Length: 77
Image 1 (cartoon, rainbow, N blue to C red):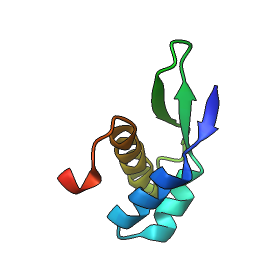
Image 2: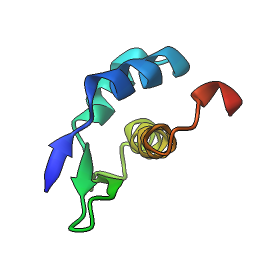
Image 3: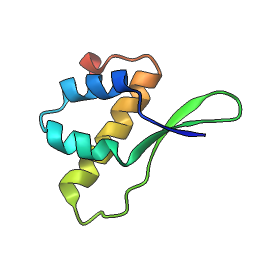
């Protein structure tokens, strides 16, 4: 089952990144997936790799969101 990123995760990511507008756009391509065993993982669906800035932000959002779901703090990176 796919879900959008929770608002609290989005807020923590927005506090970490410099380009908040680009991060907001990247959120549109990132989802949380709940596996049958109940575990969660973050995935992206972005195909326009010619838009490099957005592509790298999507990857950063996936990385940050996965760390937050594992209970890590973004201040540690």
